[in-house]
Length: 347
Image (cartoon, rainbow, N blue to C red; front, top):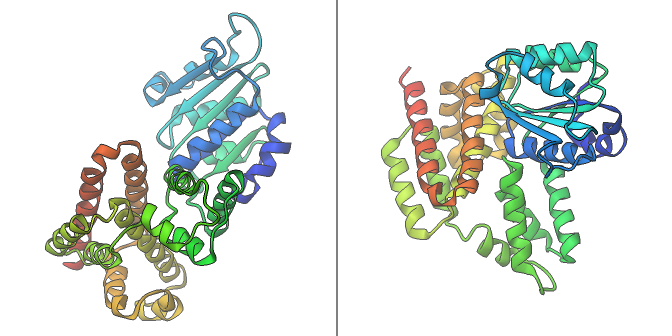
């Protein structure tokens, strides 16, 4: 089966998922990967609290090769009935590739297999094994775009019977994205705050999601792009003094690297110069920040941007899972990217 596009997933879950037994859910947005894998697991109808019906494995359990997974998929439940084998892996794993190839030729009859994986580039063995089979669903999970974010906001507001002003929505959209789990947490926090209100306005969003000094956040992001460690430390000190939520810096940095990645892709695919690509995308950049972007485009390659995006997405998720370590996680990630920028600028 061909891959299930992001906007097709809900319809796929309602109509087509029931006829399949094997699912590969992958992508850089680990929160969305987890959310969609959980939705598929619930769709199987298996009691997820029953330890005799569900087997969860991770990368450490795959050292023996595909045999372990195939044994679990083909095992007969202690009390009969169908089983679910749920594997959480990190990326392109040979054992999982071999498993998908084997199940493509002979799909399980009394079990379901859900594989959660990280980012898989097009053409990797795992993706080929899944996408080339009519009996396997390949489900990519990328960072939410504006349409997906609006849908999440609408869903939450509808359930809570709340309304939001257009300026408040625009502000909220600018603060979300990068990781589905973190996005849902922020929306849920806003909805909880808004209980009993007639309408959520811009001030409410700023108070709950981002009571922040935008200048301090921009200064920190610019310091990362310039490779200026001293400037980053000064900006982070201002952030601490203004009590700006640290995730805003990570979110802002993520959005800038997404734009740089898009611009680098055009430069590399169409052999354009920095000045040419800046003419195309320059309207999205505040004029005083354009020199920073021009330097970043010269120092960050497409592959390096992808690594930076993965690092930022991971930091966003970890900081939400471990609030007490949020500052340490963010600082370590931003320092690492700043050092990488500085090395690129010295070339």
